[in-house]
Image 1 (cartoon, one colour):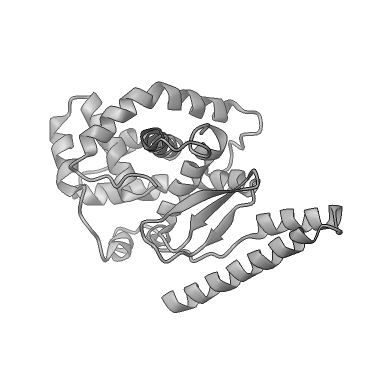
Image 2 (cartoon, rainbow, N blue to C red):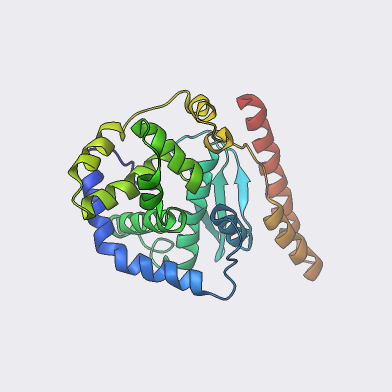
Length: 260
């Protein structure tokens, strides 16, 4: 699980980012240079497309601190995204999990906590690099308005969570020795917004970004299981997996009805 970032550990996060920047930049460039990289797709949807190839499960989970994970079973990796969180968090999580699937060679078979923590930071930085490229230019070009409203506009443009935007801007502020911007970011970093969707609407922004989707979708994994059943109908464990998946989807549906 990723660390919870606050104003208190923001400088530490930026320091670690500086250490892994070359590695993550190389991986981002490698992915974007791949001939199969769909350049015309939106970045959030591209992450979802990549995860679908691995049998992505999207479902609501009653835990606001659990955004997603990669489950490993019998050598197979299955990504899961918690759709009970705002869509912006889901998009960020999608790229986070893409990093683990494509570049993480440690977390799936490693038990040294410090190494796993570093891989989580790399996954977070990778997600930010995929979603927030150019956010500092957009921020600087925004017309004069309340500081937090500028952050909301950045969230809307780059389809990214509040703290992810602030971390990227804080990194830029540190690199450019802009202490005034650093202070402003630290002052608002730990704010909690109960009415963020209202604030988005008041700014003329699409508030669907900051509310949960409650999507239940396991079509990619179900298709994989169905394909295995057709290939090897005599192996009953494929049917068992299909029934197990159907039960998970049913339970997720009950969660959605309770939360709505």
